[in-house]
Length: 111
Image (cartoon, rainbow, N blue to C red; front, top):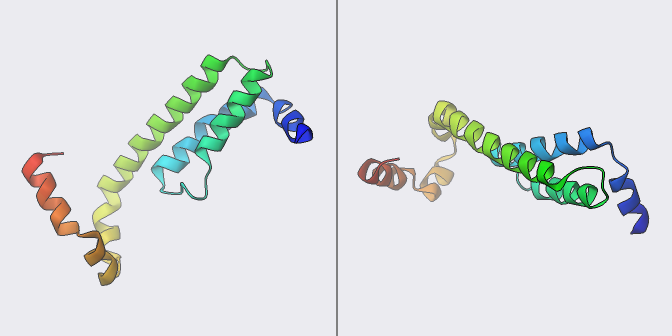
């Protein structure tokens, strides 16, 4: 385990910050949360910050920025392509998702 920590702390700080921004953004924008480990990247960023290679505030800011950017990108993608994706989804999935009920709720309460 010590070797793993040593390798992670030895990563270039710019690479770590890039991963801390990109992985949470991908996780929240593309519904790949099971495949793309956003939280893991932030934990690694915290480990690198603890090792002294990065300031902790930079890791926190990068993680927050990545999550916010990913949320906005996911919203924009869903708004642009969501209806088409739902129209092509199998009937069983559409019935299970109860899209009509969700649309009525949004119409009644607003976005």
